[in-house]
View 1 (cartoon, rainbow, N blue to C red):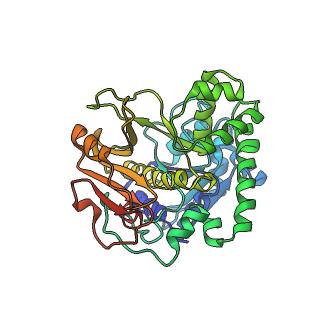
View 2 (view 1 turned 90 degrees about the horizontal axis):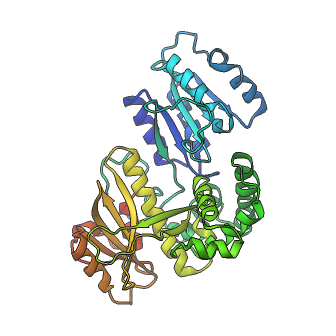
View 3 (view 1 turned 120 degrees about the horizontal axis):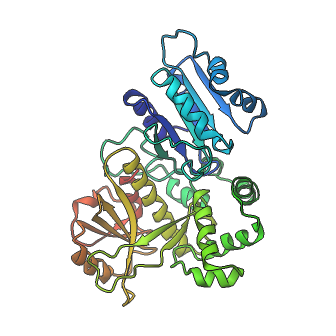
Length: 402
């Protein structure tokens, strides 16, 4: 399956010498995407820290890896070398710094990992200036129909293939269960992935010993997706301190189990400024249909703001708005620290447009305000040509993103 991230990598190698750090959830397609670059060169090397034989080569140091990859030979093409899951190596930063500084301009380097490569401080010297970070997300409605590199933020809408929308909502955006479209496989895959995430990844790469309690926290967050995150209440439920809950949620974020969005407060009278909202990376783990719909849109918006930022189009972020009178809009996307567009999510188009959209649009001067309806059929119109609050189909709106 072609991915838009392959286009990103190709463009990066044309323009930059920095290493690519390709990060994202386990089984989202990082290894597949990076290995697709094999078509760019005849001198291609893939080393996975989880492979014992590959690990022996990495432990030989910079010269050992360079010899194995043939970097001492004259070639007509620039070699590509991939280091997969190398952040599990205690001295990975020192190794990559030495390798990059020695062979800068002579080899294209991709580093992939299923946790955030900038989280762990082991290894000494900073890699600042030696890499560009690209965050790989699961499949989205836009990527199912458009995989070329996007030169602008918002694109023309398109109609997806039959059942793409329904299958993506039902099976999630991770490539294997989406492609298989098999309920029994999906159920087994979900259970295995959850166990691997907590019982292997978090156990091996963090100092957390209380795996049973962090599993309970993950389960509670699953049932509270899209709600305000009250650290004190969560702490009471799992019998730990509020600070511990904060730290554990940060750990779950670093391993792409969940993500939080903060409240926007600028120009909002009596704004909520403390409690974030938490969503899951994998929306199929959210049982409540209304909450899953909101999480589905949140995941698409997060993918878009990460893509736009990582590709250098500007600085983008995802927020929500809520004041002490409990007026709320689900999402706000900012561009270069300025409000850009508001998004309220509804399962049905039969409800009237939310008064909060107009209220908050007026307060913060966002250019667009959308009420995204899940049950509307696709309409071949550009949602972003409207600057007053409007109800739009999810099937249209989401294809205009990444």
